[in-house]
Length: 471
Image 1 (tube, rainbow, N blue to C red):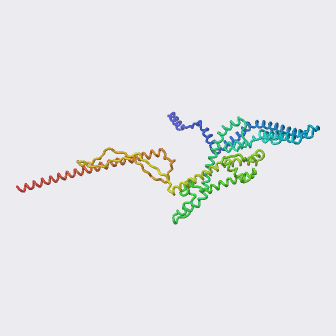
Image 2 (image 1 turned 180 degrees about the horizontal axis):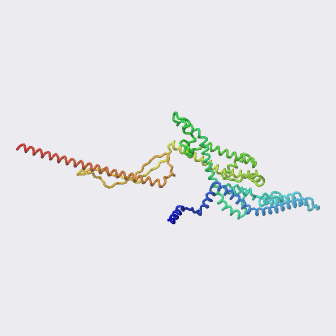
Image 3 (image 1 turned 90 degrees about the horizontal axis):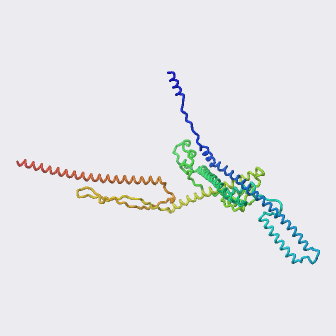
């Protein structure tokens, strides 16, 4: 007994513990979720831009050093030729031997020919070796700020064209780099554009439309109801308001155009201070950049020059990149809302003018039964037992018909099932009515036969009574 009680106590103490096994792909799911969030896409885009800048510097900078050497050689040749021409002209004019001196006509001809060849050499040096009139000195294209501006123009597809890869390797690397960087930044800017549109709708709904909602609630208040117990604007669920819902509200076009003008004006003031451009030129640059046209005639290079010198220079570069990048999302959002607003107003105008589309609705089949008649025996029969099926077309004028919108397949299947059930119920009801009418007619015939029999019986009884009286 003691041993059994001991085992019973052990059973009571022991409990079943379920250990949750850690799945293998939990960490991968978490990493992918973090990477494709807005913060993750931003960090990845910045990382790709910096890595791309360093990659292009490593590829293109050695070639640029070679170009600098060629420029110095070309500059030294030009300087040597200039000195030779000066000495030669002096010698030809002031030669000790009078017979070897050149006449005025020959000197001008010789000088014109030599100067023309020298000018061609200078132009060639400028075009091929960036000759600037000096032997020493070179403005490097592939610095970190310029490379960042280059990678940013690739990822945003602006393509300023201020610098470009000269080597075959750099040109080849540009293809996969664009295929990687462009979708990343596009996903991020797309999410930012959606958040911008939601925020703009929310601000307009909660600020501009608040007075309209308040007046509506006051007009719907029950007489004698206190203000504290009445419904207020703060009680509405954002996006599901009964009046002027946030999710369906239309932002006026004039407000959207005002936002666009304000955005361009802010950029114009910014780049006027940093780049030294005129305000109209700065506004033109902002619009060309935001629409990704990017002619390349104006490039914000000065905003990147002080990146490595001071903290303010870094701030300039970050703000310039942010303005150019977020400007793409802002302009796309603004134009999309304007387009949506114009489409809605056009539909309303079509509805008022009666320009709605017409649609022909075709029913698959309609069952048609023939009329019934009575035969010689008094029974109801159908003139033609065969049920004819006809196709019926009904033209229905509709004011608002979206030709591209179609009902989901599941909804179409449910409608078909409901129509078939209703047709079956109607057929069953018609059959029941026919049977009831037939039964009623047969019952009437039986009643008439019974009454005739009763009349015959009464006649027989009257005859018998007459016979008795005679007796």
